[in-house]
Image 1: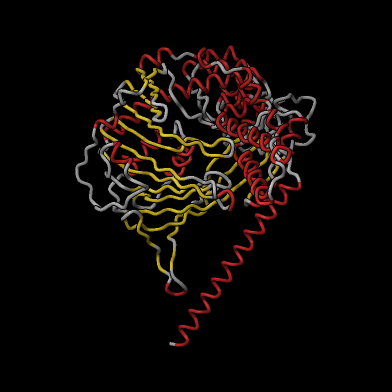
Image 2: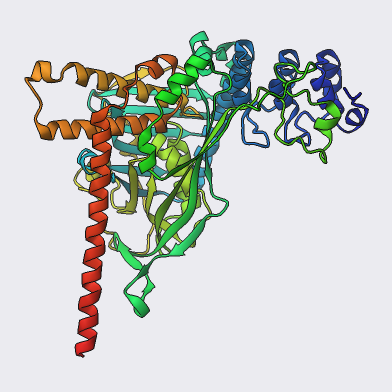
Length: 588
């Protein structure tokens, strides 16, 4: 093996990590940059974790190395820790990751409320409409009108659609009220159905003092769940994104399309070349766990336009100098020489990687005369709500793209494989009190294009005397950054629903009608599609999820057949229309 003298001159700290010389690393870190990248795009912490050097990783974490950074391939430190298969490494990295995220959240909420304070006061409604290309699923897709009041540093958001459970949407009347100042914030969740209010009040400086690593210790079952589940990294690829004006009309008379949305004229854009890239790694799983995961993969993906690339383990390239986390015996000089081509070799376990790319189109209705500011007024609110709502989180990821000029008065984006969300803004400054909003069905068209001074009645932010208020302590209600816990909970719910449907089938109902059976097949297809989208299964879920039998195959064939027939009908209608127009022109 090379001596590594060149590497010691150019990357001295990285070389200490390579050799796991953690004592010397502790001394050298005091006045050096812990976030410097090596030629392979790894920080010191990434290198230590990938090599499985727990001692060096602990030293770096004590010196505040960034536990949330991604390496050159887009993997986080936690992803690489799970791939080592080392429970201690996963426990250590997960603990520091959660500590970092909680610290950032405590600091982030007052900052967001400060941004809201500086923006002009307003009221607006957001209508959420869910649609599906699967006919029978579209019957259960709900709508919701989200009502937002903003006054000073106070914010109230009303919703009625709470979540999705057991193949049905959960509804209820909820209000989220946020109040804050420079160093404090109060968050209230108001359950109008039960007349109960949960409050969370915290002083930022005191909370930061109380926050310790010991409070962030992960449970052993959480570590085990990650070690027995695939490592999944989903990202939105917008490098080649293109906004194109939608056209209307036929042949030479095609013009840029414009539509009126709630009283405002909007230019219609198609958003092309947006891709959701999902990378799945399984090298840390046992052969039995890999087998179960592959068996539960969703063949419905073939109907969803998904392209797959698979990369197996790196062959039989090990030598007598190799170790578990350096299987191809890469030398320091080879690794740290940016001109040296490692080809398919790398440190860490040989990767077993699947890459899925799902391309989709979105539609935007942009209005340049809309009276609200996207950046100043709406995005801070979406940022705040994204901490508690997965739907708002998906909207936040999309709405922060570099849009064409104007305000997106209407947006249509995919949420899951089979569900789209259409969000429409309207009724700006139409209601100053909560009572007024209850009398408004849907979104009303705005009557004026200019907004004068608007004041929100402060009763909007008060709690009715008849409601029971309970203090929820110091817990900050946050959306899990990687969504894995939420996704696993939804998956378990769907699996339980599927099992209960099977148990209460023909035996208890005395037989099922053909129509009911047909709908049940579609529901099972959707369950499996959502399971694939939600990712992150645990060993129990992998073993228990339903197998694709002939009924499900039939449901998919019927769905594909119906889609093909619908497309054929549309083509025939368009051909007939063109023929009529040509005859009309000929007669003239």
